[in-house]
Image (cartoon, rainbow, N blue to C red):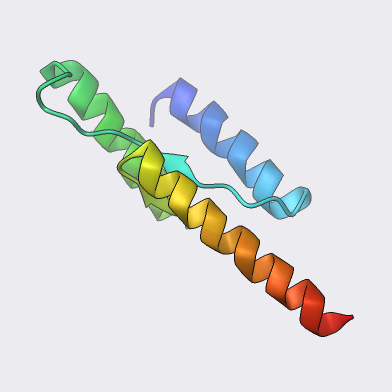
Length: 82
């Protein structure tokens, strides 16, 4: 695993596991805007984070939509637990 990916994973694991924060990963795999080396690196990032149990999305829009749904769920849970 690349050193930078290791650092990113550790930071995200800390936010998720120790701070209890939701962590969503967005990795674009666009063959038209990346060269082969960038695409290989992004694929390694995607596979590594998926292997560590993080949700990985292919676009910022899908990440934001997932976070919105998560927020709505948290709000509903708070309403029912009061």
